[in-house]
Image (cartoon, rainbow, N blue to C red; front, side, top):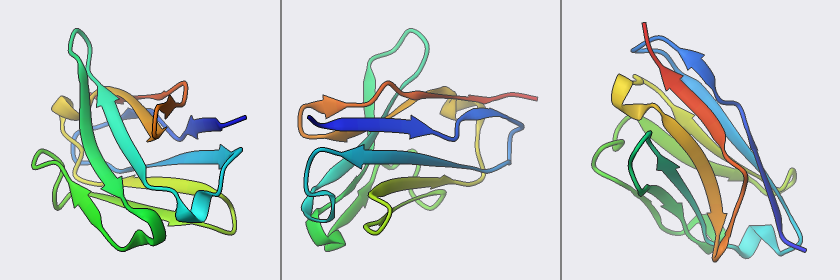
Length: 112
């Protein structure tokens, strides 16, 4: 059974940083292409980053490029999203995805 469990969200001031984690199980994580997506209040899902199998290709949405970094630790079966220079527009529930599977999400609120 595929499971994805996100954590690391919280309340942070504009300009601050957070690191999100997603612990994966039930599939071969090191070979899996993974995504981070988010959903802001009242809006649809927004793709923000992808890391391909074996980390050969990494992509970011323009809205987060240069501020967010996706990575994975295969020893821990964990996907990360390092978020720096956070803006109020980054407020959303953040989810990790593997194919059709998505975790329960973690809330990120950027507010002064």
